[in-house]
Length: 385
Image (cartoon, rainbow, N blue to C red):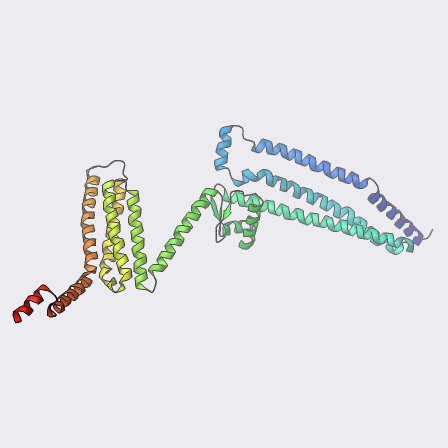
């Protein structure tokens, strides 16, 4: 037997061995081994989960539910991911070794095989190429899951007991780009690994609980309203700016009134609010009168609001001595003076209208008298006759 016949004989033996692996019970044995390994690892892991995370008392359970970290809440879920990554890497590398070696052997023996066996060898090459590629995908997926798991642990370790954390800090911990970290965290939130977490609207901060997120939304809405009011105040139209500023003062006066429980003081503040609203209502209809309320807006209203807020603070004190009572009485009396002054200001805005009406009435009476249409005019006409 020459070398060529010897190599052909080896090739035929390799082919028979490969066929036995693919057609006999070997694959079933491999599957059985894999399933057994998975069950063993998962059973051990479940035992660790039960001992590590099961609360011992109802008190501990209640306490942990209020202050538990996302890591503790989701450790069981992500431990499964860790197990899966280990299994993917283990069997992926095993597949690369076994199927890749078989593929190399087949490729090496093809030149020495008989022509009749070449089609079968090509089919085996296709099969083992697919199996090797699948093993490579398992390895890649295993590394991906493992990296995902490591990043999650790094996030949780850095966050600790904090209720929020800047995304830039988390990105620096894992040495990833901010955009990558944002996508990473969104994926963890979607998968339920961070069940109570949220990202802010700008995606610059991770908020770890619902209560803090609600406070963030409330603050954001307040800031948005204040920004709109500031834009209105800075408007190029002085009338609209004045009207917006006036409405802001009226809202603040009403808020102070709502916070002060006293009936007598509340009636005074109600009257003050009504007069103030009428002033701005009049100005909105007669913009040319705006210069007449400049001092009213720049000094009188801010000072009045300051007094109301001081009264609100004094009234909220649980123990009220003589100084607090005296200050509250003085503010209450001053509100009467302020209300009268505001009424006088409103009345003064009608001064020119009143003068115009008086002039019109005088002219009308004169014309009627000249025509003899009034009692005095009729007497004058009879005397002349």
